[in-house]
Image 1: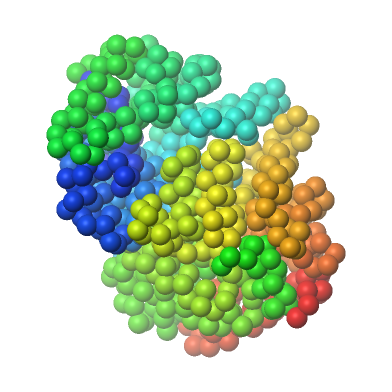
Image 2 (image 1 turned 90 degrees about the vertical axis):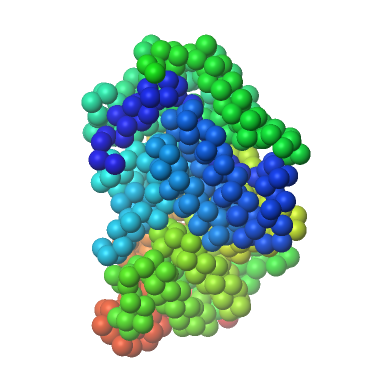
Length: 308
Length: 308
């Protein structure tokens, strides 16, 4: 894990010939009946067990096809300690599959508290004798509202292990603009955040020319996606909002540079809930949905130019 | 837990005659030798066990003295699943002590993901048959960057159980101003967030006149604290930065209304690291530090007017 994060990410995208990220956001109501039936629901531990089985089987299906997976911490936290143990197992298994992992936890805090969050994913937790990451990930998502000195502990911890950080710039929800679009000194707030991301990213660039600090920019605002892409060409975008949230492949296209690099596109429900719970062949449905998303994105974006 | 959050918080402050919140931010290096010696460090489970023992003993000391405690999620997460199990135990014990609990986790996300974070603390997790909160808290901290529709799931879940939410407005770190101070339409960003907090808070006010959505405003920026207080009089402030972070009781004073209501002041390291690790009488040190902070704040702020 010593190579630069951006180089590793780009190599993974080239190896798979696409830049699709599968979001692991398990929800009990959307799990296959077949999985649920093996984990009779009566405890959070049972729910965690079902989430673990489901996500591990999703990994088996998608690992040959895509370069990146993104577990969503919230759904595992909602199962309590057993859910977080499942998250550990899933992150480790993804790494065994040579998938790049992004822990989507949107953490943020100051000073030693930010360090504790970051070290749990990257450098290992607080005691010198326990320098193993608790939730080993190649990258994590971070909320920028607290400013530079609150973001820096995440960067420092990530850089210790060749990891990356994705900063929320323009999120994919409908109300994202309430604060992110406020005009500050003639430019929306998200542009100020994007500029900060570019500066942090430029501190440590890989052989690819991309930095190790990326930007989360939603597919649901294609105009803003294009304008942010133009401003910060050397920053990798993580693009949520494609698929179930309403963003099309055309909407996502501006995230990519002409050579097909520069972005990864996440799809969660569009893949992991691409079947009705009673369908026995749900793994086939996931494979078809994954291949379908890759084809859709390859046709409409420069992603198709990634060498295989 | 059906009474309005602000009314419960105010009643707790009146009962104790102060508005001090003790932050539970355990760090291995700052624990008493006596506690560490019982949890030989060789695993994250041992560290979690030490954190649990230490925090439970802190609760025994401070519960008769203060109205509120605020566990910091990061330090428990850094111990892995065992740390989160310890956090559960500590939150439950705090409730048995009739302490108001604020889970400091600064969560943020959109739609059903925000719901999952919120329900884990308030309404209970996702399955109807499992409607128990995983990390039961009276309130939690939330980051506003994603905007209204990302904050609303936290409010809805909190209101389901008479809980509260504290929104980050102006944080206590040195670099907080990078984005929070940007001038948007003639006012700093944090003022726009403060206005949104006031609007959310006004949706559900208690008998006290305060709403159930509070504002996190650092003690390290007393001028801004005063200006925000003047703008949003019916919002309860959670004030970090007093004590070890450099804020004085005079700095904190503007957070309070003239009758001593309207704010709670957090101290973490100033209380739970108020001794050298080798000192055997560390619980006495914590008691003295707690009483000292209460006296300091009572002398310099209107908090002293809270009826006992």
